[in-house]
Every structure is written in C-alpha cells, then in structure tokens.
Amino acid sequence: MKTGMKTLALGLLMMFGTLGLQAQSSKVGHINVDELITLMPETKAAEQSLQAYASSLEADLTDMQTELQTKVNNFRANESVMTELSKETKYKEIQDLDQRIQEYRQKAQEDLQTKEIELLTPVLEKAQNAITEVANEGGFAYILDSSQSKGNVIYDGGGNDIMPAVKTKMGL
View 1: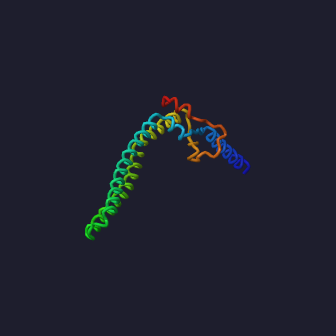
View 2 (view 1 turned 90 degrees about the horizontal axis):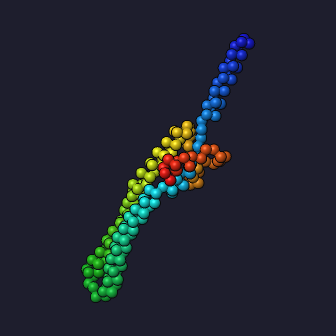
View 3 (view 1 turned 180 degrees about the vertical axis):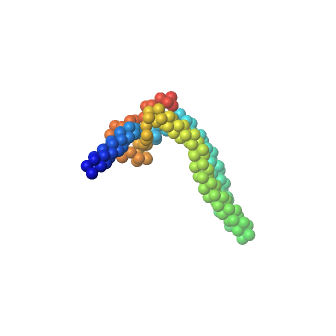
C-alpha cells in the first residue's frame, strides 16, 4: 500500500513538474498593433486614397445639394405665378431630388466603408504576417495586442515586446 502511494505521489509530482515546465517554456509577447499600423507607409497611402475618394463623393453630394437649393429658390420666386399643376410638378421634383440626395448620402457612406476595408485589408495582412514570422522565429506561444484601443493586455510587467523585431522585419 505504501509503495502504491509513493508511486502515485511520484507520478503526480512528475506530472505537475512537466506542466510547470511547459508553462515556463510558453513565451508570451506583446505588440501595440495600432502603433505598428500607424508606422507603416502603406497606411498613409491608404488614408490618402480614402480621403480622395471621400472628397469625390462629397463633391457629388455638394453638386446635388446646390441643384436642390436652386430648384427650391426658383420655386419660391415663381410660386405666385404658377398654376396648381405646375406647383405640384415642381414640388414633386424637389421632393424626388431630396430623396435621391438622402439615398446618395447613405450609399456614399456604405461605399466609403467598403473602400476603407478594401484599402486597409492588405495593410493589416502585411502586419499580421510580420508579427506571425517574428513570433515563430522567437518561439512565442502567444502574442497579445497591447494597443489601448483593444484593451487585451491589462497588465504589462515587461514581457517581451516584439515591436522592434517586427519593425525590423518590415523595414520600418
């Protein structure tokens, strides 16, 4: 009976010892992904392209609003001399244009979001690939995002910041 207890105790000790070694060998690193993305020249190019696209959409919207304002002003100026049928027709035109402007505004917002995703996806993939390469080369089991906007790391007692290695990998 004593031998069985000793064997069991020895087995448990070995098992917990192995688990302890595994926990110690699991390297954990962290990186501020927001900062990395900001440093990448591709981000600046994507932001410029997105801003140009937004400006184009805004110019179209401004043209439509100017047209609406012109129609409203003409309607008000000539309303007293218009027939009821003419008033109804012009009023309907103004309502239709206003509706088109609202639809355009909504569609433009959707298009802008789609364009942002289209432009930033390759940037994010490049950053992810560099982080993965550095993690593999460094033997890390986990890499945490320490960006303030993400809130994934609630305590940073030093750890292994892989930002310098990733910046080197990316030539930044």
